[in-house]
Image 1 (tube, one colour):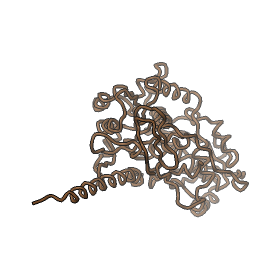
Image 2 (cartoon, rainbow, N blue to C red; image 1 turned 60 degrees about the horizontal axis):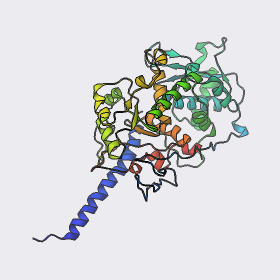
Image 3 (spheres, rainbow, N blue to C red; image 1 turned 135 degrees about the horizontal axis):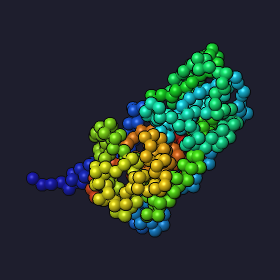
Image 4 (spheres, rainbow, N blue to C red; image 1 turned 45 degrees about the vertical axis):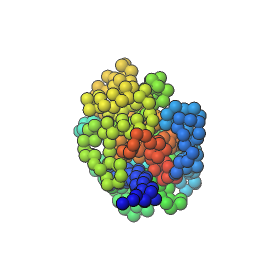
Length: 419
C-alpha cells in the first residue's frame, strides 16, 4: 500500500496546529484558574540582533543580548484624572479596616476601602496590618510610607491616623464588601448602613481574583486607579532593604529572574493537568527549571525564589541553575534578626512582592493574586517580561510565546489606569 506524501504533511500540520492551540489555551487558563480561587510575535531571533515585537512594540529584544532576555519598555504614565466631583467631602463618619494576607491583598483592600470612604463622603482611618496568626499585628508605618499615603489621597478622601476617642467600637457596623467594589454597590448596600450607624468597618472578600480590565470604556473609577497604583509606597527602611537585595542579585549576573514558587502553597494547590495541551494549574521546581532551560536561559542565570527557606525539593533547580537564591542568602546579615527571624512573615511577603515586581523576568509558578498584582506593578514600571510556564514539547521554545495574556492581550486592569 503506497503512502500519500500529502496526507503525511497534512497530518503534521494538524498536530502542529493543535499543539499551538493548546499552548494558547494554557496561557488563558493560567489566568482563568485564579478567578475560581478566591499579541502575536514575528521576526524573532533571540541569539541574533533582530527585534521581537509583542502587541505594538510592548516587548523588544535588545540588540546583541544573549538568551531570551527582553528590554524594558518605558514606564507608563497615569492616565486617570481627578475631577472636581471626585474631591474629598468632609464627613463626621469614619471607615476603618485592616490589611491582611500579604501585600498582594493589601493593594486590593486599600483600593476597596478608599472607594467606600470616597463614595460615602467618610473619613478613612489608617489601617493596621494583621498576620495569619492571632496576635500578629503591625502598624501601617512598619511597612508603608504614611506621609506618602495620606498626601496621595488628600484630593479625594481625608485620612486620619487613629479613630477619635469619642467613637465607641459599639457604634461601628461591620460590613463585608466584594473586591473591586463599585459605586453603585456602595450606594445600594453600604450607604444605608453608614447613614444608620455613622461609622463602619469594612472587610474585603474575594469571590474571584480577576484583575482583567472591563470591556466597557470609562468603567474604571479614577479614584480606584489612584488608590491601587498611586497610594502605597514602602517606608524608607524596607525600601532600602529591598533595593540592596535587588542590587546584590544584579551583581551576581546583571539580570535576574524572580520565580514565585512556594512549596507550602504548591502542596495546597494539588497541581494537576488542565486538559489543554502542555498545561497544568501550577508547576514545581523541576518543571520550572526545564521550562526556563528550554526557553534558552543559560545555566549561569541568576534566580530569586519566593520560597522562604531552602528545601531539598528545590535542589533540582539549583543543579540546573546554580545561582538560585532565597532571601535568607541575599539579605544583609545585620537585617536578618528583624526581617527573617520573627514569626511574623509580613516582612518576607513584602520583600518577595517588591523584588518580583522589579526583576528583569517574572515567572509565576502559581496562579493567584500575587501573580495578578505583581503583573499590575510591572506594567506600570515598564517591565513586561512575565512568562507563564508551560510544558514545552521538544528541546526549545520562544519566550514570546509564553508572555502572560495580561500583557500580550493588554487585558490587565492596569491598562485602564496607565497609558
